[in-house]
Image (cartoon, rainbow, N blue to C red; front, side):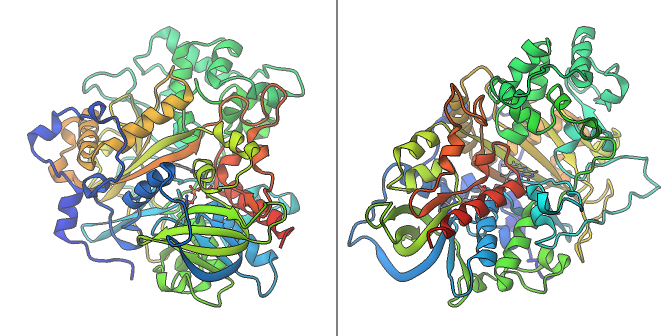
Length: 632
Ligand SMILES: Cc1cc2nc3c(=O)[nH]c(=O)nc-3n(C[C@H](O)[C@H](O)[C@H](O)COP(=O)(O)OP(=O)(O)OC[C@H]3O[C@@H](n4cnc5c(N)ncnc54)[C@H](O)[C@@H]3O)c2cc1C
């Protein structure tokens, strides 16, 4: 495969065990001592990035973090003399090249009409936002893993005009409905694998062999697949087990009113579990990290409606019985997670962006042609590494006929002009960037809180330490993260990873930052400080210690570990606190205020859904694009 760039020994030394030696396994990470986020992180912060087109863009890059802090601190005020006018005028500028920005650009391609021009400005070295990939080369085998968004289910074929947002795009961008996974050799003991990194935590745990270390102590073997055994193999107390089972198995619809969605949105999931279901803190705490994997924070902080949107216990009883049946439910994950969707959008927006034709295999495996993205004459152009710092109408927003967009790139402040702008970047950015933002939008954005998240992809030369225990996934209470698994790796074209305990694989840790009991804004800022303050080597140490805690000496870092890539997302998820979806005290929801067009600027990003997901993200971008077509 042409993507396979050679990886040097030095890359691996940078990626693995920078602080190797016995001390590595016994040293506590000095995170608390470094509580201030770094203004300009260095290479010791960013660490190993793998190989291929995404090697320089894993999580937020040091440059993106530095520019964002400068923007927040008011460093950028375009005035005559400090900004270079490129002389370019576009019909539309889209800020942000994640799923929302790509959804807006896709809509532009279909709806704007001939002769119209569009520029996408994206601050990372490659498009995709939270939907990007990591690539490793281990013992001559290419391994691909998601940097963030990773899982999807296939929407129904007959949804037609009423398609859900995933269904609206699925066929339009050419995603197949059948996928290939490697066979599990009959010479091995029977084991089940999740296809993604999330479903096994609740909805399709029956599809994997999951070891629970919760309550187990000090090298004790995990309880394997405890839910199928009514938790009788766990070390939870009888009362705890009984409550957890009631949580999972309660089929009562616990509220009769028609306005049950607003009712759910009036309380946290913790209040729902404890006050409505009558269960204890033990249960809502158990749910917290799973919930955080979808909406950033845990049960104490997020609306019960957020839990309803992902079919969580108790709230699921508001759905019809067919939806509650997970027995045939399947999730999939492209090799690089939702980068598969992002790549398909890009290929259909700028045909030359990815080498090769538009078949599934070519779009997934082709090299990115960076020099084809920003060419004169393309209806949609994409400029990478460009951090937008100021967006403002020329004159009064209601009467203006253009918007000025300033961005910094390679140390230079530049300006383009647009007839209209879609802000497909998150609220924490937009409130600083849009200089003439109305008070209504500013107040609405002020209510959005953003939680950080870390995805650590750990390449191992083998995963026999899990195989021998009879597990392919685990859930635990520990110092680093709360779950980790080996996916059944999707095979695409000539990307054909194997599934064998003695062959390389990637273990993916999905790590939320939770401080239950603290108000949500404080949890977010504490989490961000913890996420950003630690150098790479501290995380490396914690990951190794966590693997040793789980698997003992069966995991030998010197022998088994091949590489670690950290993907740090400072503002990964908006936190949908109670009232996020339907508003509070009779006031409209803040997200609906943000959806109102401001002159020639419209706002569309995944946060506005509360539960961030690829199809709705693209649909929010498309909705914003349609709003500005009204003024073009
Ligand atoms: C850990 C994790 C797991 C997830 N798992 C799933 C999943 O399994 N399935 C799923 O569907 N979704 C998942 N998601 C949700 C995911 O966030 C959305 O699906 C979607 O990718 C978000 O798209 P977006 O465009 O709204 O935001 P983003 O992906 O954040 O894109 C916004 C882009 O704008 C750029 N930008 C910001 N500021 C500027 C600026 N000033 N100038 C230029 N560019 C700027 C950003 O860098 C970014 O590239 C997950 C998210 C996380 C964090």
